[in-house]
Amino acid sequence: MGRKGRLPKESVQAIKKEYLETVDETCNPIGILTRDEIHQKALPHRSVHIFLFNEEGQLYVHRRSFDREENPGLWNSSASGHVLVGETPLVSAKRELKEELGLNVKLTQVLSVKPCPETNFECVVLFEGKTKKLPKPNPREILEGKFVSIPELEEWMEKNPEDFSPAFRYLWKLYRQVKAQTQG
Image 1 (cartoon, rainbow, N blue to C red):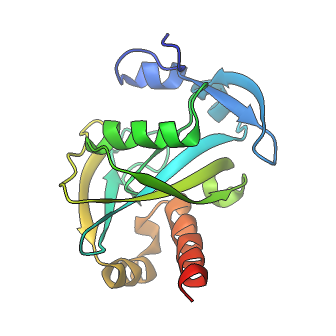
Image 2 (image 1 turned 120 degrees about the vertical axis):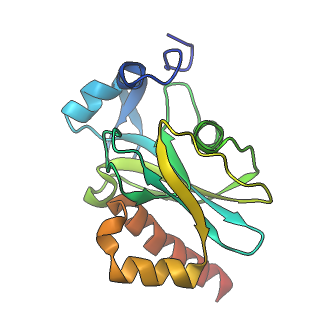
């Protein structure tokens, strides 16, 4: 096992064995277990989501692979994943962006969410970033991905909310509220 809690390569078995911190209701670490144990016991833990925009202001969304444990086949944030033992949320977000989309961009923290049903009881830190490059989706994790305009995304989500992961729907709503407050 590597220093940061991850086994070599991205096999399903390796992912289930990665080490994560369990957290309390205010996101403070209280223990360390494998991802598999945390999910089996439905314990709160930390994750990150990234909203990646292109120069036209379109958001990149991706459809999760059908072999993913959570929300298979659903559309989701540009990139997302667990915060491994020893990582900060920013380090995790940069790692996930590189692993899932092959990109390295400057990220800014937008908001954080305490464990709740909408996030599957994960403490989520949401980051945003901009890119001029086209993402290169990792086929082990992503079926397909695309940039969509905000009006197109919101119309799609209104007509077919079931196409999207519950966490993405919730985070998008919070993101829009934060942006409205900071721009208004």
